[in-house]
Image 1: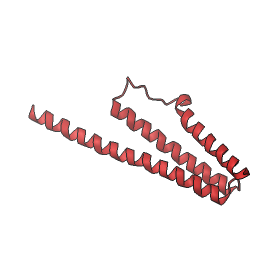
Image 2: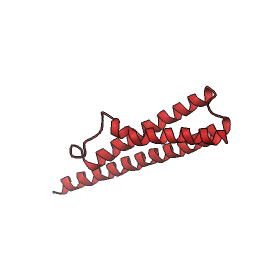
Image 3: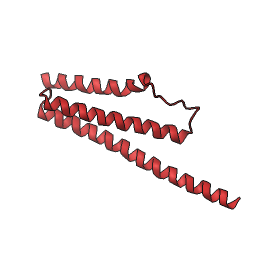
Length: 111
């Protein structure tokens, strides 16, 4: 029971940091100053960095004995899945950007 409560507290803190980070970030991107694709890419890059930081914090908590191995494995698996999803979106977004650049080049070449 105690491990479940500890797991919920840690997951809650990670989630709170993840959701609150953009509110307190001094490097927030103004949507009016950048193109929508650039703003999306910037957001994904920030999410990737937060995921990496959360994984590093989780590893540190496990190494210092704050987490049991079962809780560590469960949380790490969830964070790795979230990180993989963000990286996949980054790669997809980069491919779309390349396709858009090719289309713009074709349009310029035609007219």
